[in-house]
Image 1 (spheres, each protein chain N blue to C red):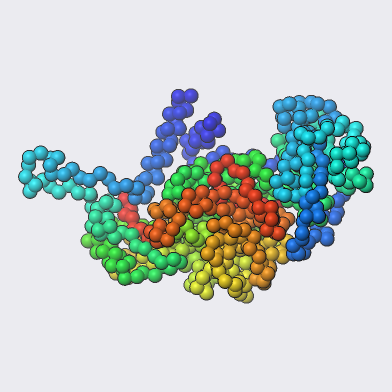
Image 2: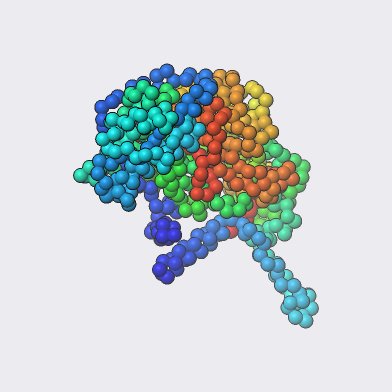
Length: 467
Length: 173
């Protein structure tokens, strides 16, 4: 309640018209510095190149994650009960990460004995073997004199009695969860051979109110739903946010001046500017992978086409010029191609073009329509909304082949990729009520689950691994 | 605490007013007082006190509710029913040259969000272009798309979707 009052009171300050729906700016993330010696140089190498693996071999792997040990229990702003309690919380976050994504069989600190500080580098092997654990995660928390926290993370193979990977990080107390996500990431990467994804954030639209007067607010959260914040107040409808690759800015659509227009919201200052100074409506904002170019769609006299503009400002370039609706767009990871949606053939289909707009060609020819194409960060897949009766999330390769439908809701739309290209998030709308929620599914079509959010949710956009 | 609350209320009501000023009222204003309310005077003696010229209610009355036109799924063409409605609107605009309107384009929920924004814009422009072809000055007609964000019919069925695929002409005050 206090926060809400403060946010509204904020409005009383004189603001430019386009800032009128903005709430309190979110604090910028602190720096996470890697410490420790062990280099894990094998994350992406040997990753799965499109083959969909049967994950049962490691889904059954039991991993014991007891509380991280504190060298001494001291006060920290990260936890009101001190660093020892914080160590247990870190283990809980790791346990939830591995559990919620259907990966492995983690066992959390509540069901395990707490190791002492000295045991972190010298595990009591027989105890863990006796509990049936195949993998063991150990870690420690140490508060430095400057208030920052050092968090160490170790993964052991119990049968081999061997250390598989270790890493350590120095984080400001407010960013303690990032250490837990980074530890989850090295465990995941070491055991699956895949790239990490937990240490990342999601921007989305928080929805409240009845179906015909929906209030839609820009919101952000960590990949596990923690550190949730509303960035706009809800007096203007906000839609379709996208994090910049460096997380310093958000692109989104707002009706704050009465018309649909795209804004760049600066997370540090909490200010926003128009993507393009034009009286025409603009939709569907996207970043290039290097963050230097913004793609947007603009309707001129009713006809929507795709344009690009340097993120630093400057002249826009029109990339499409058909009389149909050309909209959206998602860059290939190398930034050289763009997959987009067009109804130039008579119905929504997906097309690929070079980043300068040349060589436009349709790639989808299966039954049904193709919308919201999103190129995987690995480059090997394109996720999209397949409309064939119901709306479902599907993937195909960049040539439009190997279609696989991953979900079966009544209306699932708006796919967004996890940073490692193994999980797709989307939103699911319920028939009649219009209520929507964020869901995710992995590339195998398994492990579908709903992401808890404080209120209804739509338009998720998953950012890359945090810098 | 009280002062804080007062500020909040003040701001909230200011926001509501600001929002209302821009668009058509959600509900029509109450009907004008009927003749029986004004006492025993003869009907002829009463000046008609209907909605004011240039108000949304006056416009809707004058065009007999035909300020809304409807579209087929994914289409934006003006069919004969739409054309008749737009002709009525054009006549009103010809009679009251001071009136300006916004055409709001809408789509049903069975479409993806961004495509629907573009589709709503296309529908609003189709209506506008038709009005312009009937002699309405283009500068008197603006457009805005709400995509699928503002349905009027709430169930998820074909009938409701047909009501939501629409272009609504709204008088700008």
